[in-house]
Amino acid sequence: MGAVVAMLHAGVRCALPAQQVLLAEGDPAPEPGACLWGAPSPEPGACLSGDPAPGRAAGAAPEPATRTVRLSTGGPPRAIACARPRLVEVDRERVWPLPELLAEILALPHVVGLAEIDGALHWVVDARRLPDIGA
Picture 1 (tube, helix red, strand yellow):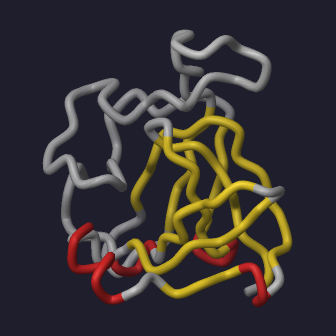
Picture 2 (cartoon, one colour):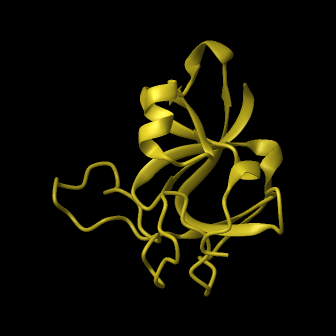
């Protein structure tokens, strides 16, 4: 697969092809931005938290989003808030297409597969397939 940007978005691990990431900024955008997980119109802060940081106790408050990643999409560029974005190389052997049944159940056309990154599964997202939500 090559280079991807792995991150936490709304507490969910995901990865996007690096060529779809236009810019990673140091602070979350003031606007709510897009939500990758299906919220049609996220309220401010709805998709802004990550999962507990390593070493935090279960049930601890989620890690707040600390970055904004701007994506090249099929339409205008979109911003998503995230935590811990990082550029990583992923071998093709560590990437699997989303099974048809799971894709149908999820009903998220931009989620196209799974990738194992540093021993954890990440949803693979194709930003070109993002629907017009939360723009």
